[in-house]
Amino acid sequence: MVIPDSQPPMNDLQPGKRAILGFAFLSALKTISWKSDGTFEIGFHSGSNQNKQANLWFDGLSPVTRVRFQNRDLDFGLDTGDGAGTQLWSRFLEDYASLLKDHGTKSTRKVTQMGGSQERTIVSLPELQLKVGGFDTILKPAQVFSKPVGDGSRYGLLGMDLLSEARKVEVDFRSMTVSLFP
Image (cartoon, rainbow, N blue to C red):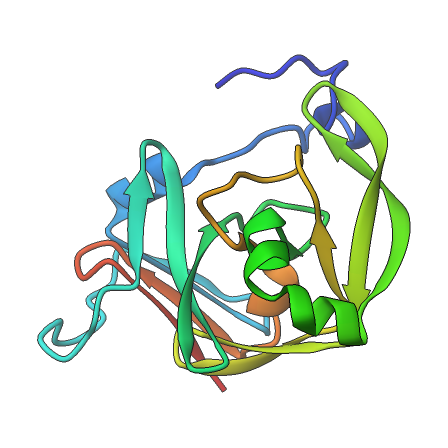
């Protein structure tokens, strides 16, 4: 995909930093990992794939992963380049309406997507515990967006804010797994 430099999110980036490598490209590398110390690895052998349970797949060109919340598996889009961080979408709003009613706070937030920025209604929870790739994370605050942000089939978008809570993140396209390590 080619996005003009004059359009979000490219116009917010400095010249020379205006590029996005999508998962369709990264999957050709077979394995990628990064550590909190800034180390990045590609193409390594991540060990036996026999004991790994797949938690990553593609919906068209969009990577999707499983996130565990309250003993339930929820499908999330995976976007390591999303500057806005992890978001919860309308499906979460519908399935967890009582949680949001009892503990949520309504407000608005400026949302920038391809095509521009607009104020959107959100419901915020102080925090939410999510298990990502076998690792316990805390989304703080947890912001739930209504349509048209997101889609109706996934519970949200998993971003670098939660992935960065781990010491190491490993994406293995051979076993189709995302794993986080303390």
